[in-house]
Length: 493
Ligand SMILES: [Zn+2]
Image 1 (cartoon, rainbow, N blue to C red):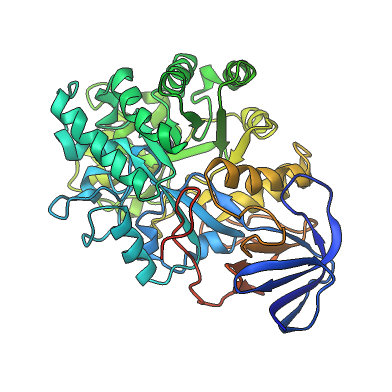
Image 2 (cartoon, protein in one colour):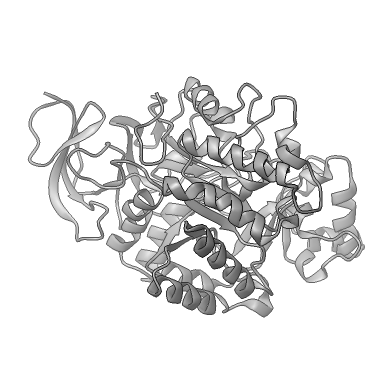
């Protein structure tokens, strides 16, 4: 008798192939058969719903969420069973217990405790909280650079570069899936291309990735893509472009040129993949987007406040509306918010992306899905934190027909698992880990909105993580079966 039998489902196995009717049997955390199930301790009637591999969120900032919110409800309810953390150059490791990682990352690493220094230590500490889902980790350039040379606005010395290299190396040895940069952020923006190439090279012998929040996603998008491809080519590493977009109205449509350039690189033999979130707004630390001496009015006019420890009353509001009420200039309001005590911790939502570009991105065959959600449940976070995966399947697959269901599931599962080195995951296949999501393609949809962003989606009836039922009929079971995964290796024990 096996642990679990899910009978009478349409299996979407993650390969991109058509769904087929079967039962799926799970034992000891793994899928033991796909076909006709025997008797099991727990029987589930799938009622002809669709059973897919658990979704993989390739772009998360959940490093600290594993400590703050180990139930990871906002991901689990979307069908996400694994996240990749450490993105945009900010990672929980390496860590100096004496330093303030939260401040250095502008809050991206909020929740990360100071009880470890390296990836193995992080894994051990996170596992002790019994996380609901699995985690993969990137090691971040901004974090490593801050440790080696603080906020110095210059190239590293040979010694500083060697220190950075050793931090990246140690993370790779311990199972990081790659090296990430956030080249618009501090201190990454002060690094030259050569520095990044030298550090990306460390990932090469491991076959791991270089992932990047590129130096520019607006006026200079195409130059930034060139830089990214050069870093990949010269370091010999697979490059993955994070949250691909063309920001700012004058730049809308440029994603076509950017994707054409990526396609050319792929044809020439370079390994390049990307991810996108299915929304027309970005979100991040507001202070990173403004020069206080010359405030960008066009940007200020499309900003909504997500969380603001300095002025909680602004959360959920467009700056233009507040400025009009107060009869003040919107650029003065930006300055007031950002220069207040804790003002630099403000997280904003900026409506800077064209809907047509979102669809162009989602139609691309090497495009994965990454939420880029910032897991701060105070205030009103960007709805992508709760809604990303069901939004792709409901809105873009079912309603808009931008891509097919089988293909969308492939790009949320097997493509991500193979790219990010998740061993034996991302497919409904005998021998694979039983990370599974049972959903109804006719009803699945996100319900989180900008006004009410903390709502779980509908249409997902069950989520299984490592063979354990973690979410069922709208309830989180609290089983805590998540693992800390290592690149192309067995999970951390
Ligand atoms: Zn980013």
